[in-house]
Image (cartoon, rainbow, N blue to C red; front, side):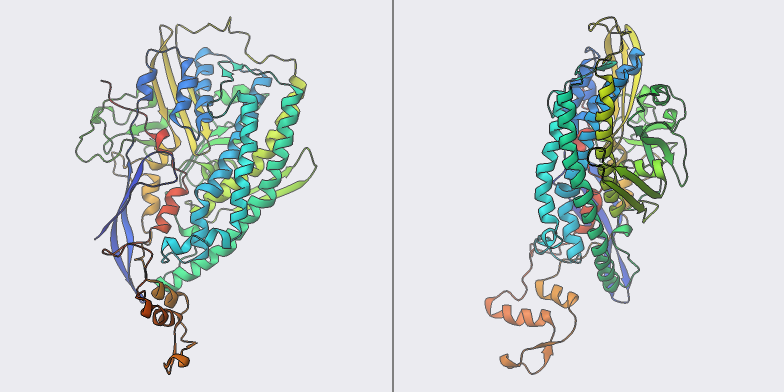
Length: 575
């Protein structure tokens, strides 16, 4: 049994390593190496929860955004919602709309860059070439699929989304405009007009570029399934068979209703809820819709570098006792569980908890009047690479539409309050209080908990999306979602260029009689014949020292969760 290691995993935020124990399976076409067990090594540790202790509670909004430069806005929003809850205040309608606009634009930015800049290159390679092709040969795949121009256009478009975030946030990254009970930025016609102008372009890009590119991937996906099925003699459908987890999906809900904020706060108060009036619903899908219940969350540390005495605790009782040399531990992340079970979080979890396994979203651009319907039937009820990509594309279209609708709605609140007037003045901090923030970052469910004593932060806890998805095994031995998703993944040995040609084109139909070879040969043999005088007959794009494995399928599975290790690990021993 071989051990295959991907470390570091690149093109993500933070330091992640994946190790995989393999096993060989034999079919009629040969013996193949697959992943038996996978281990997610989160190799980064920091100190944010410790840093916050003893500070002014309002500092959390600014400091927690520094957890991550890719997704600072969700941390800021979740920290503010924890303070809203602790203060016992309700943002007025104008403030709710401004928050929704800011974070809706942020979502559009984040989902676009993941689709094209982060996972796009892998999808282009896999859907153009079978996964036994060395990575260097697969690089043209993104261009051959027509994704190259979309990749370039995405860079321009993401800037337009960030301009909206900065417009309402003061700057981006690390916006500054939210405050307990509301916001500090007033609505103006200029801000609304710029939002509508930029988002109209982004809506067009989402509908007329992202959706067609998704459909092109689905079409090319058949090529992947056919190639792998033929080679391995197994029933493999393609990207929908890559990366299934447990079929459990958790969502906290996203974008509260401006007219019914009380329904939103139910989740923070600990009441089981769907957050019915939110755009994205809360829930704990396990094959059917279930209400989300905050009391059912606990974090386990048997395989994490923390003392076992803090294992199994609710975030309200969370603590930090570091054991960096703990035997058997292999991760700095904890292992959060819901009802003791492993749940996937992220865009797919949001869509399933809102729509189930069949999605239909009818949208109308409120500026141009154009209409569009996004339809998707989840291809694998346990989750898959292509379903996660589809969820991001669907939300980009949907949220771009909603941002424009919210901007238009905001016009009726131009002279309204932007902060809850029950706060006596800007210096006010409660003497003793606690609060939960429950939000959805693009990567998934995000929780902040603050405990205030004597007007200072006594305890602060974060459970972030990548902690759910990239975390290690728990005390019950259950692998985390990414670890589970990698099980059974094929790790082909890298082939030489002639060998690849023979796999792709096995027919003996090349006439080499001009070279004195009196029989037809395969493309691979022909290529080897041509390369032999140059000493390149065994040309391979990978190092030749020992067996190398092509991890393109495995890395695509990991990337489909959009790892953010800087968010997932933010704890260090106090010295």
